Image (cartoon, rainbow, N blue to C red; front, side, top):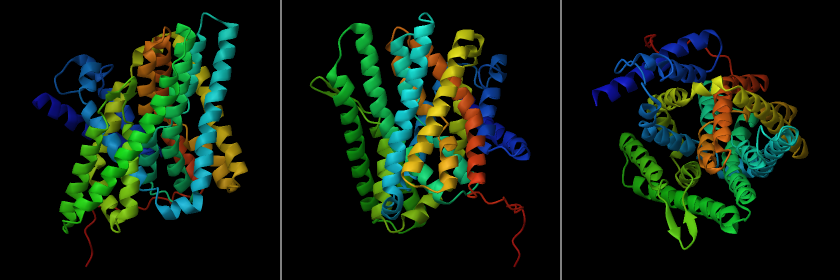
Amino acid sequence: METYLICLAVAVLGGLMLSRLTKLLNLPAVTAYLVAGLLIGPFFLGRLDVSGLGFNSLEQVESFSVITQTALGFIAFTIGNEFRLSQLKAMGSKAITIGIVQAVVATLVVDAVLICLHLAFPSVISVPAAITLGAIASATAPAATLMVVRQYKADGPLTRLLMLVVAIDDAVGLLLFAASFGIANALERGSISLISVLVEPIVEIVLSLVLGAIMGWLLNWVEQFFHSRSKRMAISVAFVMLTVGLSTLEFHIGPVHCCFSLLLVCMMTGTVFCNVCETSEELMGRIEGWTTPLNILFFVISGAELDLKILANPLTLLIGVIYILARSAGKYFGAYGSCKVTRCSDAITKNLGITLLPQAGVALGMAMTATNLADGAIVRNVVLFSVLVYELVGPALTRRSLLLAGEIRPEGKTSARTPNKA
């Protein structure tokens, strides 16, 4: 127990100390947390095998998955707060159009490029692996985006649209991956399952939205019995934890495997709660302060999970670079074209695509599912490599795009250590 507590303390302190350096370099704090994770992970300080100094193995890092899952739940819950009816009326149709188009275009571009690579060099990558990587390309990580928006207090049309698109992207990505992975399996086995391609992904999305809506209504109902701000915040924290736990349940209804998407469930909980509770905005602000150490741990642990052994494989690096370039082009031009069609401003049209590049947890989950393919190891390693690149570079690119759009104000020189003046 003491080793685990020391590891967590070192993770938070290491991330915070390194954030001072990235501040001097004008990089987001998220980058510092990820690099701190790499430094205290099993490929650097962890190799010294000094108890408590760092994470000594990937197995030890994975033992903290309850923390990363809980943090992801709070992040999704906060993003759900963006789906207020007033915002949906203003830009809901634009967000849905852009969210669908940019995900589909990214998938198609990666599919086309990797299938062409297969046709030129059949031994490098198989068609099932190419199709699966195309679907994984649709996923965008909401965590890094939200942390950049929070750190710089970004606000404006681009920021609000970005949060909606990132949320919609998760549902679209689930459908694209389920369909593509089903086709990939069919190509390998010679038969296709309509249940796994069509029924199960729709069931997962519907069940996730229903569970999230129920939890949002219940949270609002329970909170009515408490008037203290601290107790209401405690109730909200407990409900998000409960929601994260329930979203891990799996069961079967006949031949259909039923499960939930943690991100969708918690997003829906936040969406329903913020639309039925009159004081939700003030409460969300208090929860944001409470979850700061949890979010730091999420990114430090995510950095420690990045397997650097993949950098020794030239084939993985080659396919990874091609995947990153194709996905980046698909995301950018998919967002650019759909913004043009929906008549967004020039600031949004030129900058939205760049902010959709970060990729992490959802993509890694899809990659783990894809290990069942004959070429599953290549899929997993390519996604690990791309996550390493996107997570280190993506937050800085997001910050730059928000700056260019004029939605990040220059940080003041205020300090919490300065005494209040009477």
